[in-house]
Amino acid sequence: MMHQRSRRERLEHIGAVLVVGSGKGGVGKSTVSVNLAISLAKTGARVGLLDGDAYGPSIPMMVGVRKRVGAKSEAILPLAERRDLAAEKKIQPLLRYGVKLMSVGFFIGEEQAVAPLPDALGMLMRQLLFSVNWGELDYLIIDLPPGTSEPQATLCREFELSGALLVTTPQDIARIDTAKAVTMFQRMSVPILGVVQNMAGLLCPHCGQMVEIFPSSAEPRAQLDDLPLLGRIPLDPVAVTNGDKGYPIVVSLADSPVAMVFSDISAQIVQRMTLLQHAQDADSETEQEPDREEDSDEREA
Image (cartoon, rainbow, N blue to C red):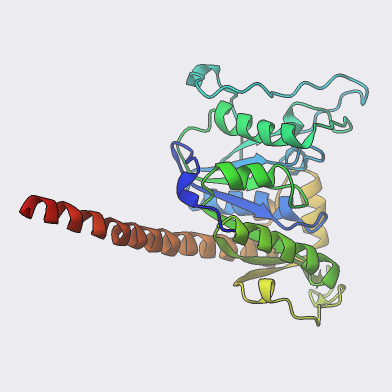
């Protein structure tokens, strides 16, 4: 059953809401989200990034924010439902590398564990969307957790999502779960912008040659294979090391092959969003034509 996008809520002052998911953990969604957000910001776009993973938030460490507290300390999350907050009473996002950031990881320590019920995850994402002072944004990127449950279900059901970006790795075990995510977005009528293949080989730090470390899938999967492949991101040991220190590759090594791939992916995202917006505008005008004809007939009568 397809869900109608027109019934969903549109976030004010935000041009496009993009979600990054895969259905699979450990494929590099957060790495893609961070570098994509910064790449878009470097073009002059106003960008926000929301870490949607409450169980294992990775965004803080990737942008150099470390919060070391005792693992047994109490963690408090903003779960109250409030939408009418004045700007000065809202949570201020953290600004890093030109991107406005918000993460559950800003409220808890690195080694603290939180276990909200699934319904609470959806409530938490709603609250962070409404109670954070995002300001005017061209793009808000939401880095989704693994799986196809919450908060994905709440976001897809209640909000107008402009597009989804799927992240996978070459092997079958990742592609199977990513195909499930594709099915979920399609059933919820969320436009899929394309697929990013992460860990697509290893960039040798000694000779610069590409080494295929994961066997590429030989099994066709129509859900993935029919989607545009926006880029293949190789593993780069330097990129991994710098990322752990809080310096994303598009910042620390902006001219590197890996950074160039992210830059190209961001350019394709902008292009696809423009085409998608034009198509939606054309559909809207087509839907309005019968109403105009009825108004004209009534005036003539």
